[in-house]
Image (cartoon, rainbow, N blue to C red):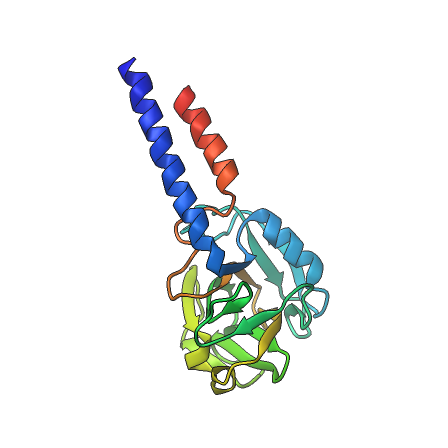
Length: 225
């Protein structure tokens, strides 16, 4: 009986915690994190000469998902996959975001296998591909671009950036992010995971899971055993 009561207490605590986590995601737009979101993104990255695929072994493990990543294999050409007009993207960048589709920050995790540089590009409705982040060398000299690290991320690294502070044009408000590019450039491949736009500085995907219902089902099953 005592064991049953303790199990019920654990279950209730878990439910409360996961409901709180789900609430935290209200101010976020997840680009890629779990396998389903990555498969969806892969279908929409229809441009570029990289060879895109779902990666299930070399992944960012510092969140509760930790199951999949996007891998862009370099096969010559521009070494990237992108779409300037992702379906249903109307992501307004605002200094004080409050609306459903309004955001200020972006968090992303990446890793580079070989080569000299890696880049993440954001396409806006006004200044096109005018908002980029790179680590290592800016291999093709695509600017403007903010260097977040002088060395390529040979191991998984996560970065959170303030889009308002980084880009003067976005500081004025009224612009929308409409597309994204995952740019490996050179070497063997680039990997990305844990990409999310959000309203507050805190990373909304760490350390919580996206699929709260599934998480509850698994944990409740474990407790009942």
